[in-house]
Length: 200
Image (tube, rainbow, N blue to C red):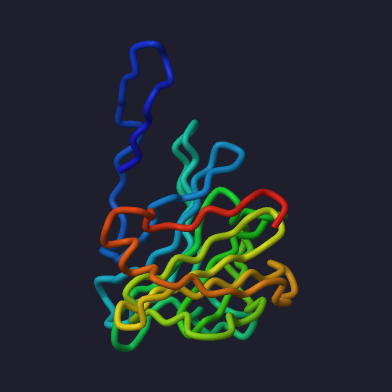
């Protein structure tokens, strides 16, 4: 279901499109939009198959055109969006994820990937060093114009680890720890997200 909110003095909401798609898991808390098209990832459940192929879905908010591409590498192997223990796991998508006709995102096993919007062909850009695990109590990766930033909090360690990498090469430009992060979070002193100053 595609909903649109107006920015008029009296905000309103309307149903832009309602479309039947294969049953699926999908995550688009901040689905990036460019040239009037929203992009997000999912795992589809085709009714005639037990396989759950990963897909890229694109939805135009003006003409309601909808496209879906299989998410595969250059050899046709499905992209890594499903963890064997935790299921569908995709992180880091935001307005900065779209770049030169590609969608950048973080998958399972610490991989940062890029997907061609026109084909669904996906390749790994780099991996995130350290303890960025889907089982962490809080995993918060995000993109900026130039960087990929990942933060992980493990409750029993009472600290957060933050790593900043070049978003194209994966070169680590900064890494640091924030002590007492769990106590600060539990007291409501920090948000459960990552904010990055422009230019980092």
